[in-house]
Image (cartoon, rainbow, N blue to C red; front, top):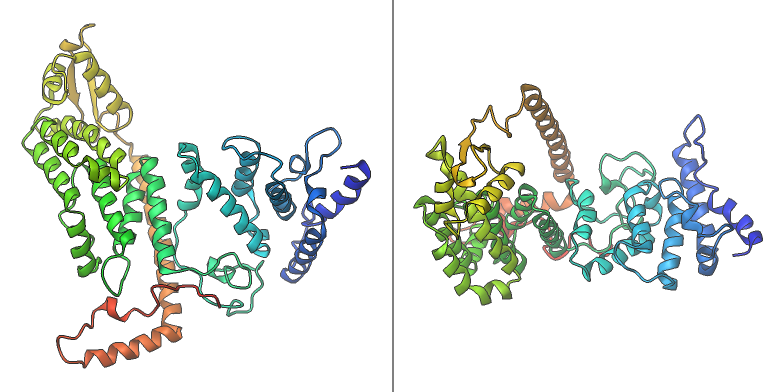
Length: 465
């Protein structure tokens, strides 16, 4: 790009928002007018002008700040992607700049470029799909860590008439057909979001969030039998419970549809059998041979279900929980016994010492090794109480955790109240209540369950408008 061109182009790209910010914030009306003007300008700039170099090397992405110049940065990124000038390799130039944008963009500005923003999301998705690297999972974590309280509805504008840049109580105020931040959203899309989110958490070994996402899928209302996604979620739910808790709960969450529970349990029977052998082996302090045989027998199934890597981790989890359960019987015991009971090689005390030390360092075992000599065979494993040892927390830490939990509960309660209010005013809910009243007078034997009277279409939550 010639110096003259960049001198002409840069003032246009930096024209909005004003920086540094003015003493008095722009009104919603002024903000809305100026950002729409900037968008029109950007739509008129040729792609080759946005991908050209700048004086002293680099390009516009090295000059623009994604947190301030969100729209220009987004358009320049898209120009590079369209031009294909940079090969997309995870961890390198274009990927890093796009990741940086997604971590720092101004969430108000992107409300005006819904189509373009979605193109960036799809670009990152398609690039990440060809890689299994943990870094791509971590990049998704800040997004899926944010709790969802509702999904966008079909509306051309917000019922209150607010502008996209206005302060909204929830994201459904600006995620509308008009902003195009979301396309047509189906029941299946919702389940897929939580399924892929659960897979990210499983890869990062964040079991509580993984189980939460899987349980959201399992408890999703349905008009008929369990969907394929729910069946796959159940299989992963069983394995995640084994890896996180060392057991599988005796029943699915209470709000699971009886028909869904029946379907997923029937189709997930091999996984339940694996869980029963795991639980029975721990209770009887058996070695890993029976569990190993079951895993070997079911190898084709685990492979077909794309769950083989998780199933293989079950073997290591069995050893972890075998060691942890020793605390129920002993306050302390020689490492020699730990090796004999839990190791594949009952003579390899050094490996057991290393394994136990790893568990302690990761917070999986509240204990300490009493090293009486250089020989691990003479060491003693001493278990700590809840108020002592490496996992002990001070009163201040416990108080801070309670405050955080109270804050999360209060926030959730506010969203539940608001959702109840909106639901009670909707046409769909009123029609549903009328239908429910009529069905309450229907002869016994007819299906009048909650799932048969859903106030929405399973296949279309946010339609085409």
